[in-house]
Structure formats: structure tokens, C-alpha cells
Amino acid sequence: MRLKPIAQKLLLLLATILIALIIGEVAVRLVTPQRLVRGYFAADPELGNVVLPNREFVDRESASSYHVSTNRDGFRMRDEVDLSPERRRILVVGDSYVFGWGVDAEDSFFTLVDRNAREALPSVQLLNAGVGAYSTGHAYKTLARRAEDLDLSAAIYFMNSNDLADNLVSGIDYRVTSYRRLIDGTIELRDEHVYSPLKRFLFARTPYGWLNRHSHLFILIKRAVGGAGRDDQTRAFGLDTESLGDRELAIDVMLAHVDRLQGLAAARELPLLIVWIPAWTELFQSENDANEVFGELKEALGHANRPEFFDPVPGMREAVDAARVELLDVFLPDGQPVGHFSERGNELYAEAVEERVIRFLRGISTENDGTEAEAP
View: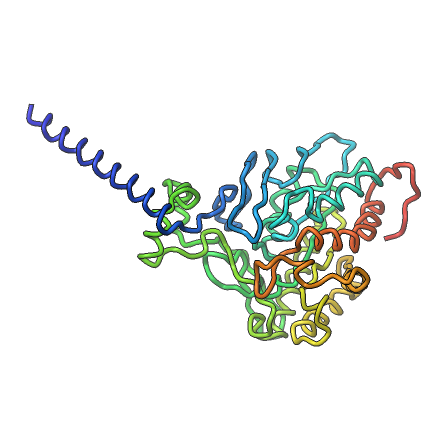
């Protein structure tokens, strides 16, 4: 009999707390709405973030509102993965540019290239494994994770110019690989878990991840106690020399990642193509310190012992000049000073890379699809 009043008081207390939380949530949403982790992201101890399968999400926090739809493998693409034996599956890895950040899927360069590739080679299926903020280390881990279960035939890594800076980030809430320079000057890479052990526990065993995606009050409280930050791995674009730090280190770390990615692809007997995604400076500024760094990296990537590498900047620059487009015609104003490709930018980039991509795909396909195979 004595427990009954105590139970009633506990229920009343819980109800009061629940009502207070609901009122607080509504108040925060109305007065000071917070930036939530996007609804298609889930925390992952090896990659930081992965894209959830079977999601429908309208992103209204970007420069322009756009729709995100994912298939059952968590890829942003219109079709499911075709695992039939006759299909040649090519994993496309990269960051938010590959994902198609800021535009609807049909306007992304991935979809535009994929459409023309399918017309040229019906046996080929490109798989969009791009995820916002992924570095070269993320690309490596993604390929390692998906190569076996998807029975891949090849891989394409769209290397963003800002991957140079991303590979140097050492924050525990972002980096998936650490690096150090050895006495002989070589770079040693080591895989790392993302997030602290406590945060990994919270993601795995509590509603922490769900609250990050749904509760404005929760995010506000985190900010108040200093716990908000990079649960969604969002970073600012950095293309100046300060963001790259030591330019020699940035290039050497990138080349170490490329060699490691090439080694993984070779071990899996997967042809690998690397395609450069240009910075806005490469298309609209002829004189820029960052362009010099990019040039040094691309020269190293062009060596014979590296994977196949394609730089679309010359062709894309010609197209930009011929079309007489301005900076904000090609890029969205979501970076410093700009960020992702606009619809027009995606179109111009797709036109610049699709011939080279299709030539690569034709080289790895075991079927001619009615055409003669070309040398890569």
C-alpha cells in the first residue's frame, strides 16, 4: 500500500518532465530552430556518417531546397542494385559532389553520366556511394566495405580538390585515418575509429542519434554545454593555403591515400579510375596559390605507377568560357565564397567527364554492347 502513492508521484513527475520537454521542443523550434543532423544520416564508428537506406528527405537548410531519396543500399540513385551475374557494377566513391548536394538527383552529374553510360553500355550499372564530407580515407573504407557484398567490377573515385585539406583533419569526430611522417620521409596511414568511445556507445545504445536528427531542444542543450559540433561531419570549404597547412605534407598524405586505395583495388582485381573535381579557383582564377598546390598534386597523380587519372579542368574551363557563365552560374553560394555545383555546374562537369568515364567502363566491360572496345 505504501508503494502506490510513490508510484503515483513518479508517474506525475514523469508526466511533468514529458510535458516540459514537449513545451521546450516547441518553443525552441519556434524561437530559435537549430540545425539538425540531416534525416538520412546515421552515425558509424568506422566512417563517421553513412547514408541510411530507403529514406525520403527534403533538405531545406542548403542554398536551395532539394529532395533526397535513397535505395535499400543507402545509395542516392533511382534504381536498386542489380546483383544479376551479367551486370557489371561499378562503385562510385567520393563526397557531397558525387552525392549531388544542393540539387535534385536527376540534376546531379552522377545521374547525367550514368544515363549516358547506360545507353553506351547496357550491362554497366554505376552505384552512387558518395557521402557528404567524405575524404580519401572514407573512400578507401567505403570500397573495402562494399567490394565483396556487391561483387564489383571496378571503382571510380571522384577526387574533390578539398580532399587535400580533409585528409589532414585530425579531429576525433571526423577523421577516419591518422597519418605520420616516418624518418625516411614516407607517410604512414592508420585506420581509426570515429568519435570517442563514449559517443560511440551513445550512438549504439541510446536515442542519441535519433535526437540529433529530430530534436531542436536536444541540439540547443548540446550547444549550451559545449557538446555540439561534428556529429554530422559538416565542415567549411577550405581552399586557401592556410587550410592546406604544409602543402608538401598535404600532397604527400593524399598520394599515400591514393597508393593505399590503388593497393586495395588491385587486391580485389578492380580497375580504378580517379577523376578530379575542380575548385572554383581553377575555373575562374588563373592566379591562385591553391591552384599551384592542385597542379603539383595532379602532376604526381599522372605518373605511370599511379591509377588511371583524368583531369577535366582544361575542357571544363573551355566550356565555361564558351558559355560565358559566371561563378554563381556554376557553383552554389554554400561555401567560402562558393561550394557545390549548381544544376548548370553539374551539367558542365558531366559533359567534361562522361567521355573519359565511358571509355574506362568500356575497357572493363566483358561485353562490347554492340561497339568496339577502346583502349583506356
